[in-house]
Length: 372
Image 1 (cartoon, rainbow, N blue to C red):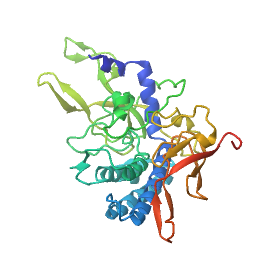
Image 2: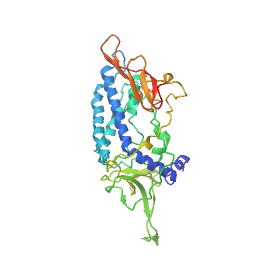
Image 3: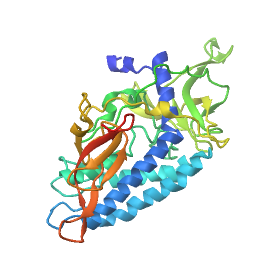
Image 4: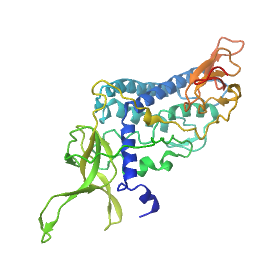
């Protein structure tokens, strides 16, 4: 076993706590509300760019993408309020939130199809700055592992969403060739993983309850190697997964020693934690899922005066506060640390025409201080 596999071993208590916390985070109302809000910001910015992109600039955004972008926003608007009521059918195969991330994935693959930057669904080179500003807004709605709570389609090749803990815990899983998704900040103390219930289903059977399930092996001693005797032994057989009620329990990835290849194999699944959040109409405090660290790719505040801190459209906001667009009067906004700085829709000097401008933003006032 490699050192990396040992680092993310589901027999390790710390790994189990982290994976359990991650599954609760990825299925939380707070995360999906953030996804919805970020996508709305992207949709409005994309529409403004399509309508106001200067004809003199060669980079043009595809207007035919707008209906698809707004379809995703419609699905979020349909699904997130249902999740707030504790209705998790939204993650079934045809549910609005499962469809939203499927369709958002298609948009991301075909976001900018200029042949100098893209080929067959893959980005080949860094986008031009105005395009990258929109790209960052789109990626702000994406979380690594966001498919975790969605139902696995009942298809021959499909296996559990989270095949191994490294898919959630390994920082490399958050890094892509031309962008990086934020790695979550864990609370100082993570709760223990529940011992597990007596509710067990097998791959292919209907899941009776929403929640976090663990794939397990069940075995018992055999007299003369044939007749099972004694109590069943239950032990972990892989990574926790979030399973949606009324869907079918998924298969898992197994290793065939004889043929030296990965295979889709059946497993038992034991309920660890039933998800009953929000069913009482109450949204609990979920701020622990979004603890902040100083962004690695953003300017840092080293004690400068407010007016000395500047960022550009598309950069990550380093300080929560009031920001003003440089060279544009009366363009002030409040932005939270970690958010992507927007563009400005304003008139062209000497003309009534309004266009999108990528600007420099200057910090005017911090949220937690008096005016600097």
